[in-house]
Length: 303
Image 1: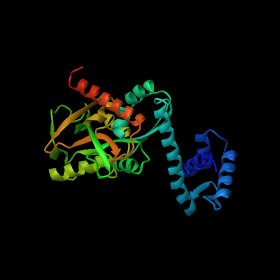
Image 2: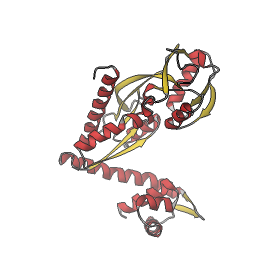
Image 3: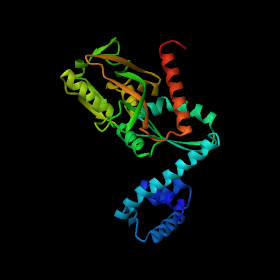
Image 4: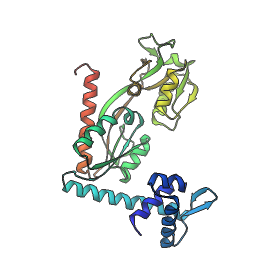
């Protein structure tokens, strides 16, 4: 069994489609199918159920997938360890990032890190807060940029910043000229919100309860970019972290402070407690802190 087989297997397991997996791997579909068949022969059981164009993991495939992920992850960790010995000249670093940070801060962070360490491969996954914590705890992620305080005592959190949630609306909206809006005023306001599977929405739901109102949810969308685009071209509003306005540069949108209560969340670096912190992960964390400090100094008019 070769590590190539594991990568091919995981590509099909994630896509559940041979043609799509082959395209992502830049190999032909027949070649991919042949490699998977070789792997199944070596394992001794089918890993996929093939019904027409549909592909599903067998029970053995589900078990094998988890072990395959761990095996490839161990290889990546070995590469990082070797890279440390060679002065961060190569290796792979896997980071989990929440949605707003990924869109607004990560491009500059990646640019700075890649300029300093061009041979280190970065893998950035946009994940929910709980998924980031689970990835850090299990060792699938080297580092997380997520919500603090962490929900697990197996995670060590290093706070980066806190930010308020604001009412985001177009400049045509009836609240656009307000300096601030009482949270209770949103009782009859049609809103575009993230679904309840997101930590951001659950935090907002607590604020709705504190204000004694039930939100009038007109639309639920799982993309902040999509929410902002909808708000920009409609009479609907949303409630998002102020950082989200960086996705649009505030163009055509206003972030109006909320009062009584003012929802607030903290973000930080998440590490596995007592886990190994590679030189590459520490170097990336340094760039995260530098970019965050720079942005907040700009926001405060210090730069």
